[in-house]
Every structure is written in structure tokens, then in C-alpha cells.
Image (cartoon, rainbow, N blue to C red; front, side, top):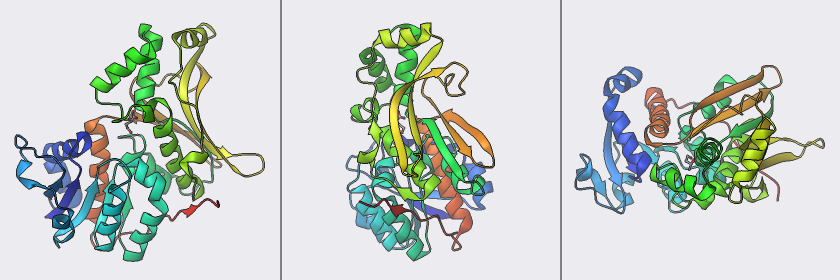
Length: 331
Ligand code: HSE
């Protein structure tokens, strides 16, 4: 029996409890043993939830439980999520996260700490929700020099742009529906101003090139000011507007990172990606283009990526493989 603790019992945390329960047999087959949730750390109580009895408000309960081998951080925000993740690694526990803010801001330090301890810090759900892009870039594409990455990395804005195009809605009307459906971040400005996509492209850039560029160095334009007229005008020209995140190199070899609404010809593989779906087009020097497509947000798709990381760790037991290390960009 592998014991895990959940930090943060919001949409993804509750989704993780659900996918573990739904897939109990699959988990047992994949891991060779069941996974049990030992603690749920949250500021709130959940009296009506089947796991309500596991709720604690004290992180020390997690840290001091020697049976917990994996801590799953789904709190959102940088602090205390980073501090708890670092403390868990220092205490000898593997850490899994869906928190792109922490990976983008502190990935190099957390990966270094995991390496020092012979543990792992895994973050499949931090980019592309349920799409297996992180593992693909770290394993399947490891034999390729990555030339560039272009992606639709934010489900909320892709949903909004699709609603505007197909139903003639304004940005604000479509945003309200995205929030009702639970796609948008707590503060939707992170979605519509492009910060969420910027964090994700920083993570993909680090996987591709080994360097974590600070998010504030990404050239970002969101969709806050996108008018219906612009969307319809693009359509008349046989194009579609998508919020594209790009990571590559400039001609002088320096990093080229941007997020911006971009007119794509309908023949582009990214042009037909609609609704909350995400897609990531990776260009490898040897492989050429490969595209990853799927549910980029939402409770169960994202939780399934979190669970895959947990299963990976449980399977490896005390022989956790070493991970890629990232350096920070020079100031
Ligand atoms: N708000 C994010 C999105 C959630 O819409 O893509 C998944 O990271």
C-alpha cells in the first residue's frame, strides 16, 4: 500500500480523489499495489466529502508521517506551495504537482533538491492538463534536438476565442461561461492576460533547452482586448485567431519566448484546435513536427496526469531515476 498526501483540495485535488477511486483496479495493476490517500491538507473542512475525515490544517501531520512517500501539491500560488514542496523533499518525500506557477518560479531549485535526495519532483499536469507532454519531452523526444515549440496552452482563452468565433459572443460573455465551467484560474486575468500560458511556455522552454527563463522576460499579449470584429475579420480572410505560446531561439541563439494572439491559416494543425482543448506542436531536428492534443484543463483530465506521476513514483519504489536539471537564465 502506497500512501500519499494531498495538499489543496480544490478542483484538481478532489478530481485526484475521484480518479484514484474510479481507477482502483488500474492503479493496482500499474503499481502492483493500491494507492491510499493518508491526508488532505486544506484550510477548509469537507464534512460531506467521503475523504472529509482525512482533512488536516497542519502540514506537520504530512511531514511527520513516515509512511507517506508522495506529497501531491495542488494548492496553486507560489507560497506556501513552494515552501511545502521543498520541505517535503527535504523530509525524504517525492513531490508531484499540477502547479505551473511553482514549477516556472522554482523548478530549478526543486529539481536540484530532489536530485540531492534521490527523489523525484514530477509536474506532468502543470502544462496541457491531461496531455502527456512533459513525459514525452523528457523521455520520448530525448533523442532529438528541439528546434521550437508552439502551443495553445490555455484552455480558457481557447474556449473564449472559439465561443467568439462560433457564437458571436463578446470576450466578457464567453469568459463568464468559462468561469462557470471551472476552466478559468481563480483570478481570470492570469488566463486572459496570457500569464498562465507564459508560465507554461517557460516550463516547455526549460524542458527543450535546459534553461528556466523568468516569466517576466516572456513577451506577452493576452486576449483581454480582443474584439469580436478582429475574430470575424480573420475568419473572412480564411484565418483563425489563436493565443499561441512560442519557445525557440533567435538568429543570434538567444531565447525567443512569446505569447500572443496570432492569425493562423486554416491549414495550420493548431487552427482546428477548439474549445477547452490544448495542443502543442514540437519541432525536433531529427523527428520534424509532432503534435500533442487533448483536454488542457478540467478536474478529471488534469487529475489523471497527476495520478500518472504518482503511479510512476510508486512503481519505481526506492530506485527513482534521476531527472533533467535546469539552470536559471543569467540575469
Ligand atoms: N486556467 C487554465 C487553462 C487551467 O484554462 O488552461 C489549466 O492550467
